[in-house]
Amino acid sequence: MLFENYSSFIEKFHKKGYKSYFFEEFDNKKNNQLIIRHDIDLDIDLALEIAQIENAINAKSTYFFLIRSESYNLLSIENIEKVKKIRDLGHKISIHFDLMIYKDVHEGLNKEIEIFENFFDEKIEIISIHRPNKDFLNNPENFFNVRTSYENKFTKDNISYFADSSGLFRFGNPLDSLDFKENQNIQLLTHPVWWTTNQNDVNSCVESVIENKNIKIREHFQKNIKTFK
Image (spheres, rainbow, N blue to C red):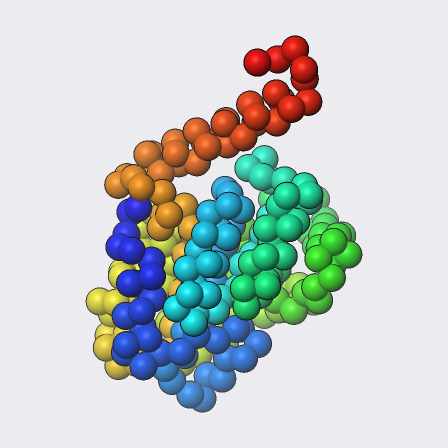
């Protein structure tokens, strides 16, 4: 893993007096609030692993999944069950929306919301954006008719935003921040791949995910092609 043990990392927030909240529970008039968000870009198994860790230490978070992705099939039978398991562990699930794959992003989002709600029986209240562009970031409050994790309420208004995108903490490690020392509100975005693979650099973490996916693909082909070994 690129960072420290995930359980120990979150427990440091708990010991400092923080409590985890869902986006819709957040009240920016108060302090000591931690919004934990996971954008699932690569692998659902790793998301489930983090969800189990959080459940064991009484932390709750929101998991955002790509509906259209070359990395995983959200709507496979196995993955649907895994995502539902994450929800059963006390977490929220929603859409990680990719702006770049649609000519009409509003029509695309409406279609994805319909798919997600039908398959998971889950009302979409907030989404996260995959690789947000400038047009969106200039107007996150009003870009869509559904709330997003990039709204000022969740990133700027009596709250600070920290993310481990690309295997590095943007804006520094939150545990070293003045915000943490003063128990200010924090939105924490983490990607499970950087916390669950037993590797020490970005390339090795990603290669580990690729290797595991190749094993699963081979097993799938072996089950479906009797002459393939």
